[in-house]
Image (cartoon, rainbow, N blue to C red; front, side):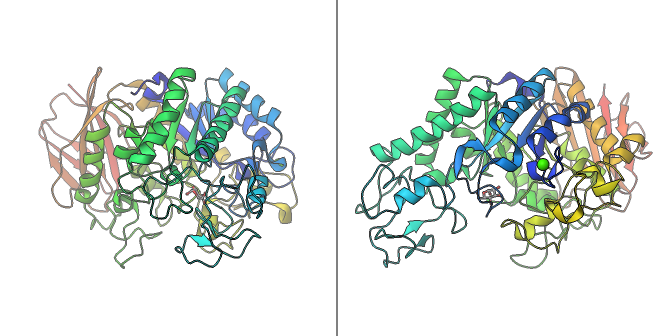
Length: 523
Ligand code: GLC
Ligand code: CA
């Protein structure tokens, strides 16, 4: 099933279009801005990008509320600019994957406006409506909005009505339709048309927003697995090089559903949280670093992560890929409460484990998460991870030449930036770049190589794992804590290929300095 060759050593860069680079100085990043920065992207070693949505939208959820799926929002440019971005990216060997908001539209989408009518029309069943406006179905339904006598089901915010692909299990046949119903099939056909449209312009695949949300009342996921497998069949026949990436956070299910890649992140499985953001207080997991494994206090436990990860890894190996991203637009940046040195230890991990790595724009320079930033476009606490990319030490950090008040979000002018870090061999940017290069130079360290965790005891510091592939074996040793850590192992003949401090290595032991990592080639 893992039939997309280029994924075998791909490393993705996740770009939030409004904040990456502003090519026309209106204060908002745009598609031409991304095209202009392709050399930077390529030079870092990224060979694919995932763009957050750029479709026409009233931006009540930063573009995850789409009014026209076939049109680039004016603020980002035109459909021709998108085609041009794909053409230029392909010339450089960079693939372009885009966001597919499959589960809902904006309230202002013409389809929804038609669906609101009390008179039957083509869009009456395009969305999920109950059969009475005042009937309290459940908290996901909103009543009293439209002339139509029914409540619409929302998928996320109130302004994101759920598209109707059907219910796997039907509790109330007066308004719930099965996925086979022609109206649900019509919704699905429209989704396929949208996908084919962007693929025809040059897109290389989709990151599917809230992928499991398409089929309702589907506790065992069988409905949604069937749904996406049908799309995957279409892919395999017509677009065998294109990829499907899910926002699902349950790789073993997502990959069974036909996705090539799924993220391990904040939802469902707690493992991402246990790695990076565990917190002592109940129900509060973000953005604290607390007792996560990657915390210098050394109170975290790798066991919590491994319990989830290894189960998912064993079930998906050779079928699809797990991705542990550095951050994304929905969660606090990984830099929050971490020093650049601590980040190096995190990246040494993210960039040497199997699966497809995703680096969120700005994480390669350690851009900050701004915890108290006022909300923009429905971002709320997420807003602080969405600020403009810091390119230089100049005006607006080189993001745009506009007046400050026109900026999409405030930019940190005196913070880290690409220009400075490119010049410094030991900068986070250059460490990231070297880690990517090393990953790509070796089958064992690539997306494909096997992994075996060697220090699995409670606490499990230092983190030690072996990667194995056609070019032999590597040992990755990471100490996120601020104390020395040692590990006994037969290291005869081992060669250091990359490290950030002087580890002490003898024939049978390695001693790691505080907050450090070493990657060794074993012989
Ligand atoms: C996904 C997106 C998030 C958005 C939500 C609703 O989780 O990543 O940004 O708000 O879906 O579309
Ligand atoms: Ca612009």
